[in-house]
Image (cartoon, rainbow, N blue to C red; front, side, top):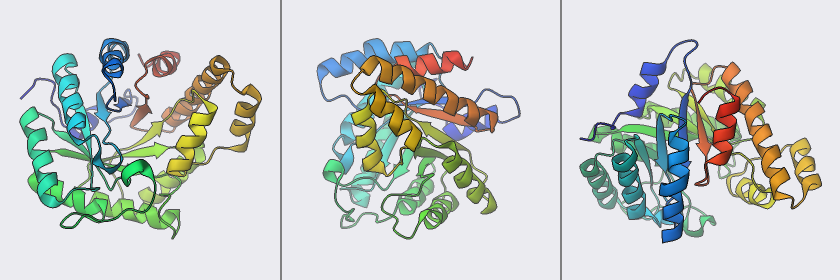
Length: 300
């Protein structure tokens, strides 16, 4: 096993305590081109490693389109940079046998952390459809992984409720409690831009008796149109004042990025003061925004 391999649940347990530096983690997606892969490994990762993150994660494309690439990238990060890496895994497009094969390859590569998700349908649009012989709900995937007893298991939380849960956000939050009860070790949230949504979400889970770490997912804004596209896909609302500012800045990319970094910095500062156990950055395979934010927060 690689020296860098650690269970994320153990990383959280070791850091637990008042005044401790929050767990810092970064999310990457598997590049589609050789140029993109070089940029990730030659620029983004070396830059972000200087911030001394605790772990990173690698996404699993809609419909399972990057299944093998996800593991390959995760393996390379662990071997080349000695950074514990979590691979995403979804229920989409796979039966139990295929999912077990994925976990077996992950185990052989020394990947010990998995983020268990229901996942998005191919193309990221339309309704989720269960694969014959597969799982319909993410709690079933969590339970399956827990029975293997090989991995630390993360799962996703939605401070504004999952876009597909028509019964309302509190019902969705109860579904998250079910995932935790079936074996999830920690929660990483979907992106959000109003911290009050996160605080309400966390308080509700606390009343349900949830004690696992709940880490907010942070997306530094670098483009107005990109923000609207991401928000539409995941159902995250854009606060009125934020939307108005982005409209005023228009297509001035430098100004939008500077504003986005300022906004995310203030958001993170408030979350840290409220005692979150960690911050998970959606990097979009770039390093500058997260570097600036963590430097300003004196977390480098």
